[in-house]
Length: 88
Image 1 (cartoon, helix red, strand yellow):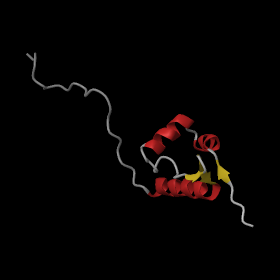
Image 2 (cartoon, rainbow, N blue to C red):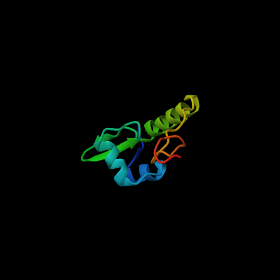
Image 3 (cartoon, rainbow, N blue to C red):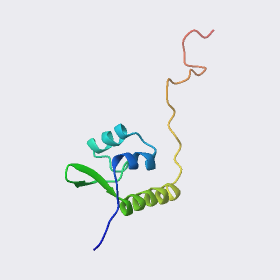
């Protein structure tokens, strides 16, 4: 008999460091790049331990192989000299 281990949503939230509500949000939006895809066990969602480990390893490898892109600046643009206005 083959036994397979599964994580429930509470265990997955601890492993990923996300709240249960954020995991539910990612699942509702089908953002499987943010959380691994679950399987249904009756009415409950479960995540195979091997699948979660593989998903984490894939994300870790993708982070190291991805070229560093400059981050976009956030917020209001800073004023620069020579924009016109009240210069004398």
